[in-house]
Length: 143
Image (cartoon, rainbow, N blue to C red):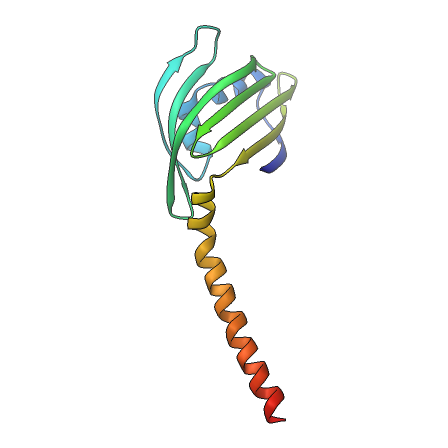
């Protein structure tokens, strides 16, 4: 499980920031790895559900996102399921002119994704370690 937090001051009212975040299609504009958001549907109790595709280190991951807690103008919590499981929380505070945004994402990646992304890094690391071990042995033995 990974947790990422970030805070930002935004020169826009909380209601405006919430309105932007409340449309899942807008997240493609602000989330670098997000490829697309499709099949946006309104939930009976408020909020939305959508499918997404996300690209991580060349691997495309698909899943869905669903609003699970929302207080217009102050809080939006989304649950991710599929290739990435977790939650993303947006807490907004402020007045008519500015918003203090606290972002927190807790998520886990499936083992297959971790293996796909990290395997090449581990392989290169182990290759360098092996070369260094042999070179160090050579140096030690020759001196």
